[in-house]
Length: 451
Image (tube, rainbow, N blue to C red; front, side, top):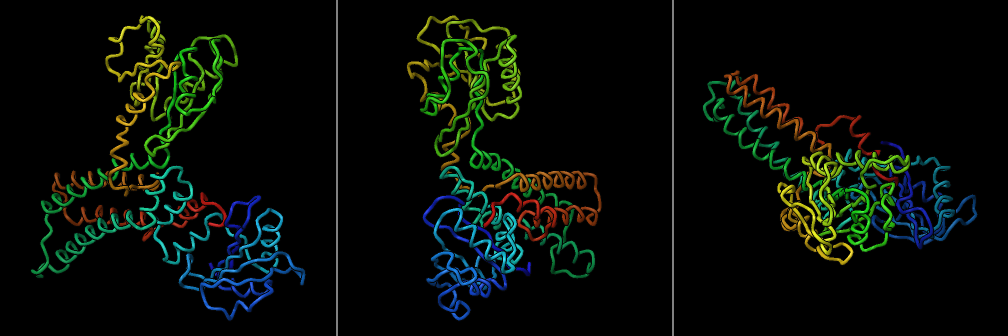
């Protein structure tokens, strides 16, 4: 943490401008040693200066240098940003010059990690930085901004303060029983408060499912037997001829993916190989891939032919997807009906003619309804942003249920206090007020270089 680091902060490639970011105690002095222009060590903070980066008195590039002095910077350290001409050769050359001067190449996410360790941001804000970088939709960006602004921190901090107040009262009750001004903490009182906390935690966990949909999108699997219209449906939904469509059954032998934004949420749509018994080795591999994808899907679009009776294989496959969000699509409604809708009474049904573009809007509306997309659009976007946070809250919920059992069994308050302290510590792990070095190092590895 005491050394000076540097990394390329813009996408490396052909472009108008590249930015190399330098952070650390010697950032200004080191950049000044390779800069031909004004003396950077004598310039005020948050100013920009024109000149050249030099290497052994040879000009490497014409640049603009931004100086930002501690503590009013992202990392709270001195930061220098070198704005040079875009391009792989020039950008890498300037970075190499810095490394020759003793600067260390930053690890992935190290600038954000320093911002966290130096108290500039909390852990939820740090995680929201990468969510913002990776956001694929407007609503995902808005959710990440909520975390970056500190909404998640505020939510967790309030819960943590409430737990701390109970712990403080218990300590006073135990150590100073003669002190009458503090509220006496009884099992009944803890039971009442813990019931309220449980409701709050369950709401947070429930909302996290919507947060995952916003962040990661809806993984949508199109399945059915060969030649039922799966590839045509994919092409219609994404408005692109992505999948090959022929009248030959078994044309799609591997998965084909496409993406579309529906009410601000990304649908990652996968067209799969038609499921049937086959002796063709390549097609058989495709069928097995399809079956393996079912457990990972958030939504399954199960296609049936309107002019064919439902086969036993189709009914068996449909049963295997019953634990998922399933929409049954009866395709080819322009042909004579032979399907028996009574066999599908437990599933939402959309009748379509994909070829004639009939029923597409009905399908989209059903997806919106199934995932409450309109509600997600209008409600507060303060959600847990990742699996780490969700895992901690699930652990807290288990502890709360353990406390409720302890109260029911008349366990002493000093024993219940141990579980309450554990909840307080876990809430601290969410926002980074208590943390494990190994977990922190692993988390920041997922960041990009220069961030």
